[in-house]
Image 1 (cartoon, rainbow, N blue to C red):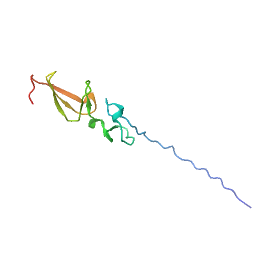
Image 2: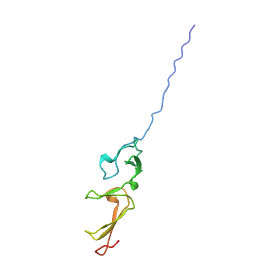
Image 3: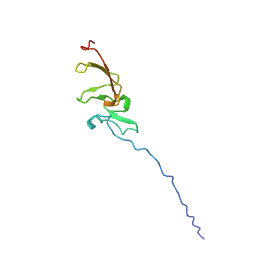
Image 4: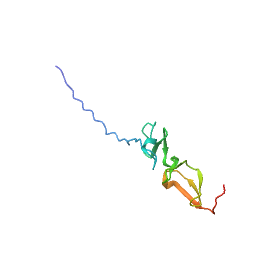
Length: 101
């Protein structure tokens, strides 16, 4: 006599958070190269997954500044700083013109 036993295997659904290959805020997609997909909250920049605050600042004229980089804007008589995270990460202070370094 042969006895057959039927077994049922169930698995719990696996929840994953999708990794992405997204460029830093305000940066072109072409800068998102050389990364494995980045975890949520990270952006691909020059081959590394970085947090938004480690992303460069992109100004409306297309110029790019690294986080914590200072520059003088002679046209507006301001000294500006990139705090990271795209165009919204730029802060500027009015200065007396002409600006002397």
